[in-house]
Image (cartoon, rainbow, N blue to C red; front, side, top):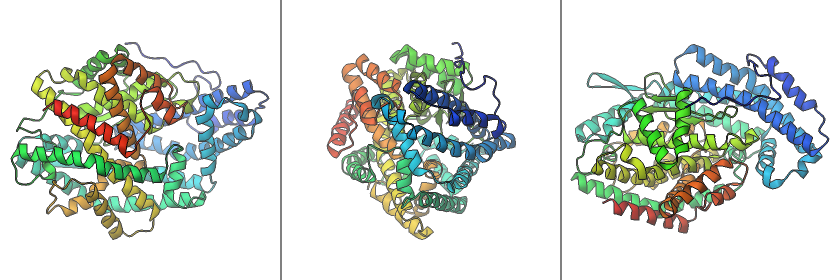
Length: 570
């Protein structure tokens, strides 16, 4: 596949290098000082601003990618820190000035609300957040957050003479040999506990920084500040609480059934945490691919069966070197799809180690990549920066829709059936965990001056509220008490997690639609994703042919659909 070339620039020089603020400041000044005397002038101004910010954001994102690909490389670390410390404070300041210029211009009131409504709402929310004193704090926060990767990315264990990163070690939890699973589970948790105080101190520092930022901006707590920053105009903290309760009432019972079936199948007296990933029936762990190249090639074929365009997206990324898939020491944990607002071709980063979970991660991030390709030609950068409530529909829907073609990964029919069962269980399993993390965060930031003991007690309370009763944690209290420290979102992207649960409902609904309507569902999927964030969340969900609804009744309907699909595989 041919590489994509970025569109010619009309405002920013083609060969602009970003090595100092002085190199980019003149273009912000031009925007700030330009006369806007018509609707046409304003739209051109928005387009020029979008181009400038796309150039800068893409540069920043590449610096982050290089950092996560090699967290021990001093050169990439300094390049990232340079952007954060020397450029970002100026960008925050000038974006505020440009936002004020836009809102105060009379022609902004005449823009078509259907076309520019989300942009206007986002700018208004941004203005509510701005406080001059916070610029330095935001820079400090950005750098502080990166410390999590430096700590967790270097966590490894020694097992049977070999060294494994924690993502690599996860594959042992799928092993049929229960002794192996238990040994590795303890090794992983003991390794995490070795840095528990370091991570506790880091989280405390982050909480205080975030709380100070919220107070200086005039908010009573960081939770409310963050809801505004995330443009959560379509639901409130109270809706989140109702969602938590609905998950507890409708999803947790089905999760309990799944785990009791597993306990019976494994013929064990007690179901322990190291038993949750192993496949029932004493089968060997599913291995859907051998290495990064095999994973990519099989994913391309799987996607192409759904829609040839989907496979072509990944082929373009391969051609352009926009993939880093395999786990290795010195690489940051986790996985992501990084959008590129100027060229439009995203970058997939992950830590593949040949497991089913890794395969699902690739399919998930591939869904994000398709979203990037479908929305890359929207006229403004702000329309391409989609909120997670729809972004995760793109990725999670692909996890489920692609199951219809997983024979690419599992030619053996029994393996295929078990893989699908595992995925349905995973969908159910993630919902209580999301509720756990989200409810914990609500408490954390509405009680910012809590002690470490209070934090520990609250976490234990919330954890067991959403933990199935059949799962036995006897003797593992210390592991459980610090289980939250493995969740990157708490450290780096606070409150970015409930979106996963909201979007998971949307993804289940998309899969249901695909089972019922086939190609029509794929057309709806593409239609919604091509809109980026140019429409509200309810409108985007409607375009996809599904509902933006997380009521108990709707959750019950979707859970029953999942249960039916699972029963068909038994």
